[in-house]
Amino acid sequence: MGITFTGNRVGRIALLLVLLLNATACTATMDPKGKQSEDQQQVTLEQVKSNKGVHILSVIPYGSEARIPVKKLDNQSYIPVQLLADVLEYRTLWDEDSMSMKLGVNGPEFELQADSAKALKADKPVSLSKPLVMDQDSLYIPVESLGDLFGSDMSFRVNDTEVTINPTSTDTVKIKGVEEPTAEPPAPQEDIHFWEKAALSPEQPTAARVHNHYIAAGADGGRLDFDQMEATAKRYLGIKYQFGTGPFAQTGFFDCSSFMQFLFAKQNVDLPRTARAQSELGVNVSRSQLQKGDMLFFYVPGRFRTDEVVGHVGLYIGNGMMIHSSPKPQDGVQLTDINQPYWKNTYMKAARISAS
Image (cartoon, rainbow, N blue to C red; front, side):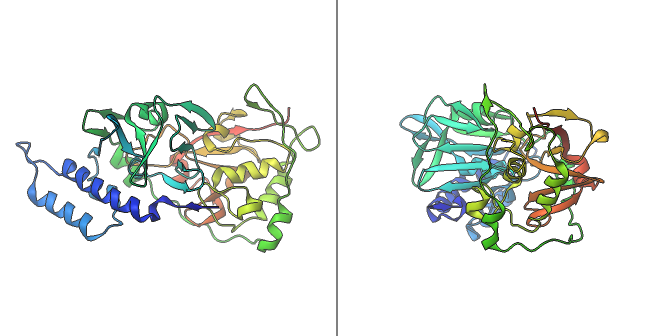
């Protein structure tokens, strides 16, 4: 298929290393007179030089801004998409065949393509002022298009030489105060062999789309069978998570939103691909009124990412539990108590999908 994770590409790593060195110089600590601390700058640069795989966030102190150098290409201002993704703590997936990149937290909320002024954000097309371009084996985005794509995800400002991304207003509280999700005891599950996966996931007829809205139609033309949906979901416990994966029958993997799409397709309900687009469907319900089959939406804490955008989705199955595909705390489809502190603190909303 020609699909590789961008973080593994040697050319990109070399380029990002240079950019990291430049960005690090801008983020060194200041003394009371406004001068850079040479000791702090030297330590930071040595960290980068000694480990080519170093992440940019490891050299930016908590509460500090992130600065990405602007590069002039054909006299226009661009920044590398991968470095921006690193700052926003997005996963990325590069498709060499289509020269496109998917980005997002736990699912592919954005899709960008080289030499194209069209992009996707939460399954919706976005027109850019200028096309994205390739330079030295890396994808670059026009600075003037950052707001169109990422304005709801981050607070930033721009000048001729750099893009400055502001930390979240409650940076320390959110990242250090919200504990990582913890694992639940393993649940009894039916073993699914790889050769059985395709048989478990036949192509389902999907509902019609009218005026860009997804129309749900139950398998029997009426109420959706959420008991059946729960039973189906549990058959896939332990199936591994893979960001931006394709259809399960072809790949054998799920991410958070593709798992929801897969389960609702079993009820002849056509959901959009991304968690953000899924969160716009159905009827919002309060946490105290949750019912089996409700979709649960969460933000995922990030140092430079707002907590106002959906980053994860799971399916409520009753008794305070949800089933979902996630890279943490386990890797793959898992059962989780939504009353754990992490999930209570990151909960955003719930939506109920019904047949129509």
